[in-house]
Picture 1 (cartoon, rainbow, N blue to C red):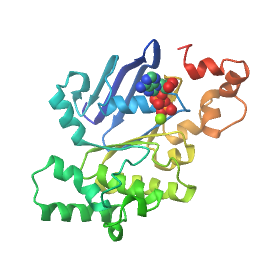
Picture 2 (picture 1 turned 90 degrees about the vertical axis):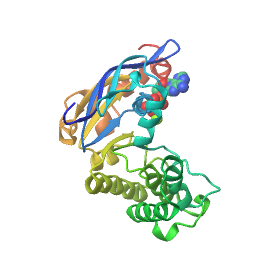
Picture 3 (picture 1 turned 180 degrees about the vertical axis):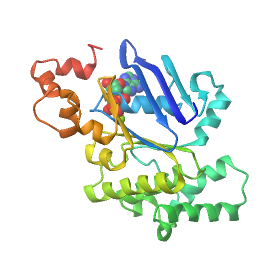
Picture 4 (picture 1 turned 120 degrees about the horizontal axis):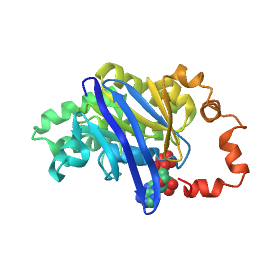
Length: 267
Ligand SMILES: Nc1ncnc2c1ncn2[C@@H]1O[C@H](COP(=O)(O)OP(=O)(O)O)[C@@H](O)[C@H]1O
Ligand SMILES: [Mg+2]
């Protein structure tokens, strides 16, 4: 592994008869931000869920910090899950608890720290995401962007070495979305965390990625730096990266295979 945080080798996932991820290979280097790109239904969230150990793999291997996830016992898998941070699309805050209590929750559940220490740690996390003045508010009393920040502070509560994000800017306006991107960059630079970000938004990908991986219908298409992606001659990559109206993606829809693409019957 050496400088690798995550190694995905021929990872395959099936739901029933459908193969939704087909032998995906990718590496995530320690300290980098890797963005997983792809259209809706391409398998991004499924890949992320396998990486965080929330769904089992059907073929191949995922190694994180030298551990092969499929070989872990239930207890080891629980331990693994508390060692990483995950920010889901919704932020998934508890509505009946203050922002501070939401962030304190993982510390209360998974550590023996005294309450006074937990309060200090929560303040540090709130400061990190710019929410210190909003500690006592309920999730319903803050904006969508602030909820994402709070979710991120909670994902950071136990000081994970790796952070996973699923569509962090979904449902946010462009300015707030750019602010979340800035925060992702800050956490990466200031704390040195390794980040894996799933998104379909190119603007965001180009802002935050050290490297990107493009998936299409469950298959690995290409990986590279922002420049490599921009300079790619692959028509599919070009259409995705530049949002072109003409290309293999639209051709597929026009030739009538769109529906079966959505159903992934031809994989
Ligand atoms: N639990 C599940 N059961 C059956 N099919 C699923 C399940 N989760 C995802 N899928 C299917 O797998 C494919 C990939 O989904 P997903 O990983 O959510 O794509 P993305 O995040 O790229 O939009 C889709 O066709 C989706 O319908
Ligand atoms: Mg998704």
